[in-house]
Image: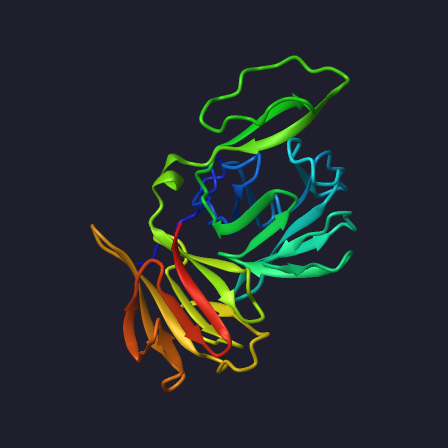
Length: 289
């Protein structure tokens, strides 16, 4: 005999309590008076930030104040998360600032958008911000500061402070201690049309770059040097290699012999700190993070 299970109306419905994975990036301030601070751009949550000395926002936007950078406008740039099926990027919009916003040495046209990916950096005033892999355990702390206050120390929990009419809210974010123990390298473009741009290979983050004018691969993060027309669409592969004593980059040529490490043409080889990889009209120098 077949039995049919009839649910009890008093029973609680079974709900899948497994949280959805967070999708986004962490933006870390690498240099300038606010060095060490960071914030997250997260899909369906904090997707858009306005950065400046005294930023004003619209509905759906958050503010990140750079009070101590005197070369930054009140509302200088907007960083907005952009998620597609294959890539996670950040759209950078200069808000018609007086000092300009830069990706590498290229100045973003006022009121126009520019997209960067993990490892990419933006400079405004004295501040350089780098897009990194999302750190979901980053602690978010809200503080209230006056314009003249010093930057928030990310290593200590801020004390409660009384608010006044001259104070403005500012969200600051602690960077985990592990960021101080990062293993990886920075690829600095020292020659070619992308000179001044930099990208990072980091253990636990982006560990493989596929480099070219229009790279396509499922096995690594594309690193587009689209302005260097002398490059193959997919020119080479770079893999971070971390051991107990050394951090190096494995270089795999995809261009049939048009990759040089220092003075040696390579098909498969290694690049060490301060080595230079030459491809087309571009040169990438390996630097420590």
